[in-house]
Length: 400
Image 1 (cartoon, helix red, strand yellow):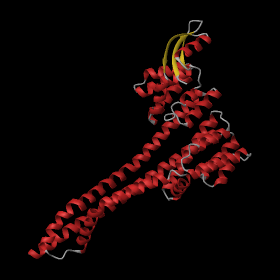
Image 2 (cartoon, rainbow, N blue to C red):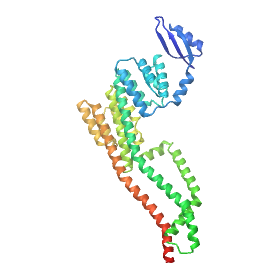
Image 3 (spheres, rainbow, N blue to C red):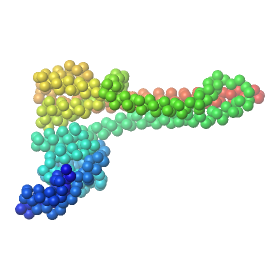
Image 4 (cartoon, one colour):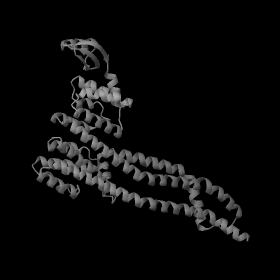
C-alpha cells in the first residue's frame, strides 16, 4: 500500500503533518477527515522514503555528531519532532537533512522514534534502534542518546587508531612490491640483453634473477588469475556459516591478531551491556542485544550461551567465566559490579580497559612490524641490486 505525506489542521486549528498509508490520495483524504483532520496538502511519499531507506548511509563520525546534538536537544526538554526539525535545519549535510526530515514526519504521524529509524537500516543498526527504544520506554532518551554518542565516538577513535597502525606497513609493502615487479618485468630484461652479448659466465645470483624474471613474465597473468580465483573462492566459502566459523576461530587463535580481535569484541560487548543496563533495560534483553554486536562467531556463540545461563538463574559473572572466552578482567569486574550493585559502571570500566589494551597491542605491533618490514623489503631490493651490479663489476675487472 502506498504512503502519502500530508499536512492538515485539526478542529482546534493546530497544524498536523505526517505520513499515512492509504490505497489512493482520495482514500488518504477520507481517512484524515474521519480522524477529524482537514487536509491542506497530500503528496506521494512511499517512493521517496523507499529510495532514501535504500541509499542513505551516514558515516560513523556524522552519526555520532547528529546523535550528540539530538541528545542535547532532547535532554533540554524540547519535543522530539521539534528537535528533529531543528537538527534538519542546522545541518550542512544534505543527506542528513533528508534523513532527519523523513524521521520527523514519521514521528509526527505518531510512530515511535525507533520504528521510524528502522526505515534506514544502513544508518541505524539494530543496536542503535534497540537503545533508542529502551530510552523511550524508560523515559531516559536524552541520557541514552548521550551515552550512545560516547560509544560511537569511542568506536570511531579506536577504528582510526587501528587504521593508522596498518596504513604505514601497507604502503611500504605496496611500494616495495611495485618496485620489485617493475625491476623484474622491465629493467632486468634490458640488462639481460647486454649480458648476453658479453658471453661471459654470469654469477649465480644474476642467473637466478634472470630465471625469476623470465618465469614472472611468462606466467604473470596466470598468477593474477589464480589469485583472483582464490579470492573469489574464499569469498564464496565465507558465505557459509561452517567455513566462516572456522575462519573466525583461526583468527582468534593467532598470537597477536587473535588478542586484538577478542579485545575489540569484548569492548563492544561490555560497552553495549553497560549502556543498556544503565538505561534500565532488563539484563536478558541487554545480553541478547549485546551478543548481536560481537563480530567473531565463536565469541558470539559464547555470548548467546551466557544469556542462556543467566536465563536459567546463573549469575552473569559465573556465566561469563564458564565460557572461557572472555578475559578474566571482564569476569572479575562483572562479579564486583554484581556484588556492589554498580554493574553498568563496572562494565563501562571493563570496556575502557579492553580498549586501552587493544591500543597498547596495536602500538606495540606497529612499532615491531614497521622496522622489520623495512629491513625485509630493503634486503630484497639489495639482492636485486647486487644481482644486477655483480656482472658489471666482473666485466670491469676483465677490462682492467
